[in-house]
Length: 330
Image (cartoon, rainbow, N blue to C red; front, side):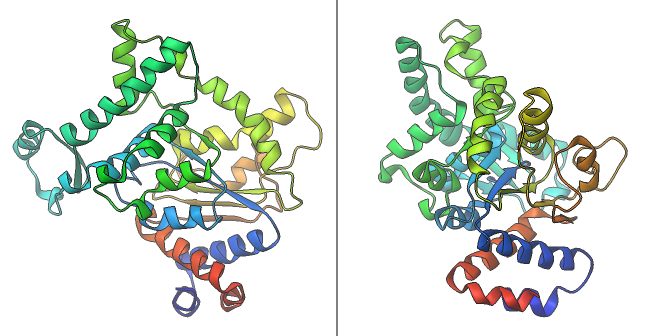
């Protein structure tokens, strides 16, 4: 893959992909760490096929993910055979989608999540964890419930390839994670329904504010090495904006000295630059918020992350086996 990128990726978004990949390798070579963010429906798009091996090989050191990406990685593991694809989704009528609903399928662009085999199957396993936390008056972060669940699942329950499940890889590595805005997810809604019916207390799930308080210390620990920690962002929204804000908050809200800025930045997004858009904001705007510095390596790849991210990850895994291959990208 490295040779392919070097030969073919010369200009425009291709050049940005090549340069960002080489800078990622330089960052790792210098002892730096890399923090990834996942917006959109990357798990439903099976990004785990390339993401999980990168986590296991030590190329990714922390994650910020939406609640949807968190749970959908699990769905792909336990209900993979029941997913149905709709390659002609652009030509579906409203009635076609109504028929998909009647079959208890929830369409995500050209694929669908099976409600009974995914949502309800996982709910039956997750609910006892919530109930046990309520009984012991324990509060946990949202991802910690999913870490415990996926590590306890018997292999006989796997329908998808565990090697392609990024949530399983992250749980095995106990990777630092934040899940901002997890209320905006299927299981966030399910949890809220139990709280509404007074079957569970909301207090067993730590809040987004508590995630940030925890992340203050986590960021400072991860950035201790001289090269610090970089930021690799897929999409935009809260998955990206929440963690990147930790640097100015440490400096300006807590008044701490010596806080290291993010030491690398790359965003893959198909959101074009636009007025007032966080997803489409250029990286240099983040300098004004004290999230990045003028000298920070910055890259924007305006393309489809489901195409670009696997290419970058494949190159990084190749580099891991043969570090000198990165010189082809000079």
